[in-house]
Image (cartoon, rainbow, N blue to C red):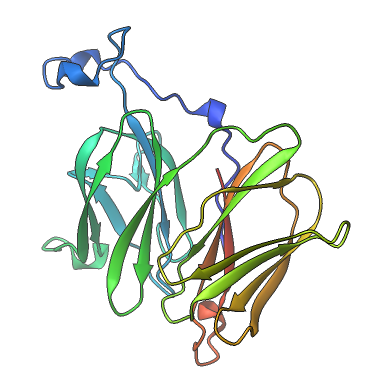
Length: 246
């Protein structure tokens, strides 16, 4: 499992000057300093067992590194860092590169990107592939805190409850009743202490997955539910979790 690397908010600027595009972009996208505002978007391939995929915003390939001029890995559990995206409605297309040169999108979804906002795209499913988009609240946690949210991305797992427990003071954060493709809001937790995180079947209370996690104070995380409950013993499809550090 490959979690996102740590990316602190201050590394990403919400505005960039695009002088060459001035004639093409409406003035409504300018701020008071006449600088064009953009959104930022990153992506996760959450399709269990998936091979390499390409993800496009309009005609622009999101999994392409302009610095080294080559495609970035985007197979199961691979992630892409935040990248600038022009705002307003953009068509997100997922393409299998094995189908080139006559590839057609596996799935398409129109997503509205608001200037100055951060977004995550999740390519999800197993037999039927979909794109899920979330807005990422990257406001800095209060002193000594971290922020954590959960997103259910296991296509055949039941509805889940998420439990965050620390034995140091006995406090428990519990978020109930999240089905496949549902996301919780961000919750503040104390940073730099060890938590036990449990994925619990909502109907029946069976403990399906558990692990320990030490969130770093000042960081923002998304914990995502991965794999398949019924995976026929294939370890590469095992039910579990991944962690995104924003």
